Every structure is written in C-alpha cells, then in structure tokens.
Image 1: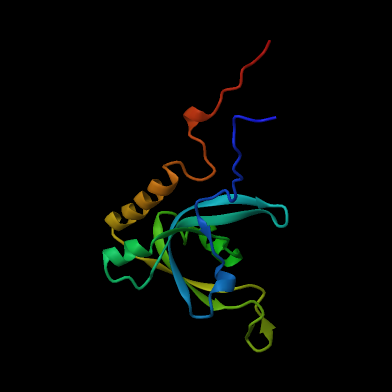
Image 2: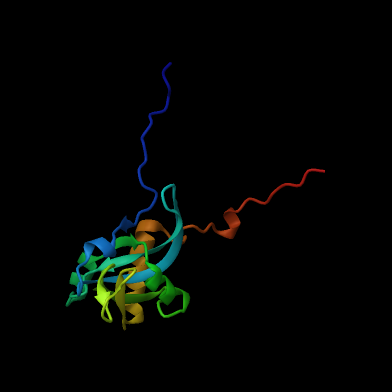
Length: 163
C-alpha cells in the first residue's frame, strides 16, 4: 500500500555537538566554553546524567571575527569535580570559562595514591556583557529561545477534569 508520506529517520536529539574532555584532552590542554545551561539526559547504558550545553570557542582568538568563526554549539558530560563546582555556584550559567585538564584517572599523587577520576582547573573568562549576549544570540539562532528540556508555560496543556 502506498502512503502519502515519506519517512526520514532522525538521528540525535540535540543541536549541540557532543565532546568528551576526559578522552579528547591531554594534561595541560584546555577548552573554552560559554556555559548556557545544564540539561538532563538518559541512556539505557548509564541511566540519567547531567550535560553542560553551551558554545565552545577558540581560547586563543585575538579578534571578534576569529572568535565568531570558532564558535560551535557543544555539550559535554561533566565529571563529579565539575558538577560540584556547578552545584556550589562556582561555575554558573551565563559565563565563559576555560577548563584545563589537570590529571587523568589513575595518575599517582601524594606518593602512592591514585586519582579516582579526571581533574580539571577552572578559569572564569571575564567577558563583556556584549560578548556574552553574542553567545546567547548564537545559541538562539540555532536552538531557539526555549532552554533545552523546558516547555514554556503557555504550551503546557491544562488537564481537563471529568466529573
């Protein structure tokens, strides 16, 4: 039977490009990100976890044009160290950061102790309000104004009560 519809399989559910600082960075390497929001994701393999969404950009950009050319939507799964910085308010949405890998899981410290996880140093980048607004505009152009995982109140259906 012929259908009036053609199917297209959709892959991926986020406009943010995923990256893994744990695997992709060597000790001393860093990345810069404008931290827009956290979102909750779910995986059959790992269950529910937190994701940081934002704009990844070149830390060494010298001009606004270089910065804009390097900008891309990006997300990563923060480890416990970074999650604690978010929970404590040290790392806040609406700010830009440079995150430097400081150690790997299994690295030795204080003699024979081994690190149980990856370590990072966090640096806040003092950016002008105009520059932070450019990051927000970049996201809004590609994602829209609705933060991931939230539905505007006017779109939430009101349940009908049956008597």
